[in-house]
Amino acid sequence: MDRIWRLTLAVLCLLIATPAFAQLSLVGEWAPRYHEDQVERVPGPELGDYAGLPINEGARLAADSWDASRLTLREHQCKVHNGPYILHGPIAFRIWEEKDLRTQQVIALRMYLNTYEQERTIWMDGRPHPPEYAPHTWQGFSTGKWEGDILTVYTTHLKQEWIRRNGVPNSEKSTMIEHFIRHGNIMTHLQQWTDPVYLAEPLWRSEDFVLNERSGGNWLWPCEYVDEILSRPHSDVPNYLPGKSPFDGDFAYRYGIPVDAAKGGPETTYPEYQQKLRTLPKPPKPSGGK
Image 1 (cartoon, rainbow, N blue to C red):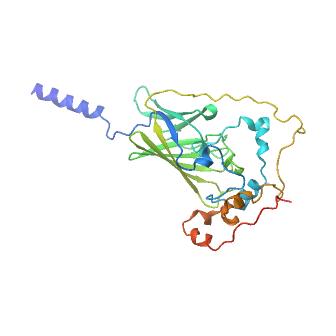
Image 2 (cartoon, rainbow, N blue to C red):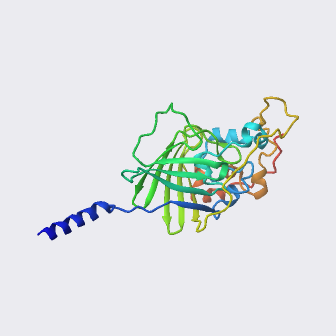
């Protein structure tokens, strides 16, 4: 009988020590694959290219008024990308787990992003999001939960930056839902970006990353502020008045894309828009905003 009790106790201890459900691990170093939206993500989009974005008139006006020379200002030279954008650009990142030493429960997933040397925390302990008046940051406040083998992350409290790297803005009211899906050494990142100020409908994006089998590469992003244009008047911010951009219409004309399609909008993101494209006129030669 004593032997039976010892065996029973051993089995119970084994069951207690074994997790009820083993999650996939996202721990490791991940490198990007650029087969999706390569031109937008690496060299950068052309001015006036808002195709495929469900933006509204406010976002379009802001983008049409944007001057790329703004990036020469000191406060913009080393400005980082925000959470919804950064994984869509040139980047590699590292993920590790932070665990409670007593319970071994995962408190958070930590991320280090080599672009601008940013850090991100995804809280996994069920804590609530802070109130609206809490400080907003570039990576925002993120909480995650496992849904089967998919990690779903909710992010609020984001700073204003851009949706596309040619002046299409986002607002500080942006929120993001992400899904991290791993299959072997491939991880797919699927994102839903919502912005009541500049997006007429949520924007969906996806990217793939590959697990680095060997650690290495450059994980630093040195950036130094300098005065790039010495003749610029103090406090001057480069911009174009509405309708005065010398690049207005260039993108549509260069690629033979109807102006309405190049300007984006929710209608242009649906497959049915292809029917309308056939009825739209070819773009006229731009006047250069003059």
